[in-house]
Image (cartoon, rainbow, N blue to C red; front, side, top):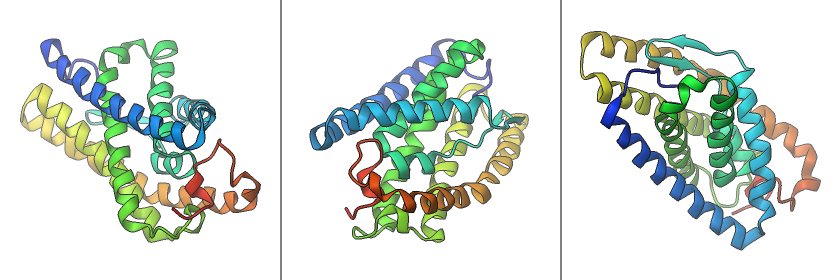
Length: 225
């Protein structure tokens, strides 16, 4: 989902700062609500965990260039289910920044676009979770179709934002559209893996119910809404 250098340049980059700022502001709003409900540790501790995990997802997990971007196994829905929306958002932004600073400085000008591409689909996933998961259902009891809905929302959101940035930067050129289609087709294969990863992690979490009230994990992981 990394936007390739050169696709959006010059004054057009201003929009990426605006969208990333909006996504960051909403993440801070979610974090403030979480701090009021569960204390500062409920944001700081899981954010450290998610940042480390996201760094591994980007830098260590296999990834390969396709069309206008790269295909990554980000596991955004997994982070959301285990740690919650605000820590997942901070972790995605933090892990991406660490990768850029230490290993991919050429990606830093695209940081605003990449943050937007990661965070806005996460917030859409949060909205879908409220719709497809009954209030009395802890996340550890999710079914495959629910995990699939969350993963599909997240991955489709990433593909949509990558397509937007490409068209915004290069216009509706035939090669650009072709590259978008190629990238989208490749990226949606992640949907095959991510719901299974979600269910596997949630199944493992069932054996850790001593973490029910821990600030490290999302309260909804073991408890009804």
